[in-house]
Image 1 (cartoon, rainbow, N blue to C red):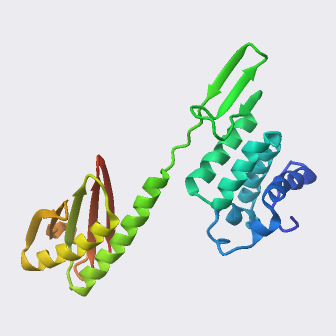
Image 2: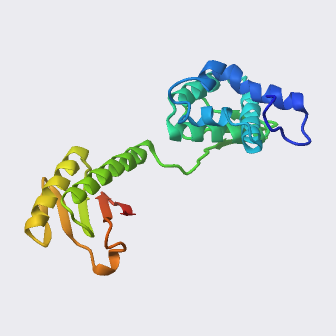
Image 3: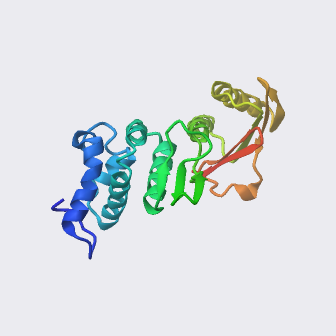
Length: 241
């Protein structure tokens, strides 16, 4: 803590003890070691020493201290954070924050469906509260990762074939990453034979053509627009190289 920038006007020992709640829960080895040291959100935060990180760590430590009596929930939080699933980390810590600022609140059991927090007001009123922080679902995070990989592959294929300003649209009801990879390869083959191709390849509707000249922002560089339609969702990845 000697190098850490502390919060002005707040007792130094209180800050140290509160932040140490995090170390007591997760262990110093977990927080300071591992191959994911530069990727894991909590590890990155723990190893920063700036003022903002101190504020965030203090809030997390205070929320943990506030909920230490709920052993099952805290242990479930520990497992979620260690697994480092982005949505789970942020969502659970957000629930932790909310419960620490609402008096007479009790975190629901981890298996509880329908609500996350129970509020009791001197026996007069019971409220079940569902806490939501708008984040990408794990499924959407996986989609974004797949699309990024497809984008990289498409870029390489265009560069190999010395093509620029090519628009590829794939429309599907059910996304299949392996099929999409094959479609990208096949679509380029069709495109080299025809200036415009539109049709069904492996049960996916594919449209590939040159973009209008005003879309080719860099005539000497690669311009790429990939559009992916999944069900009722429209995923756009736009890049200019």
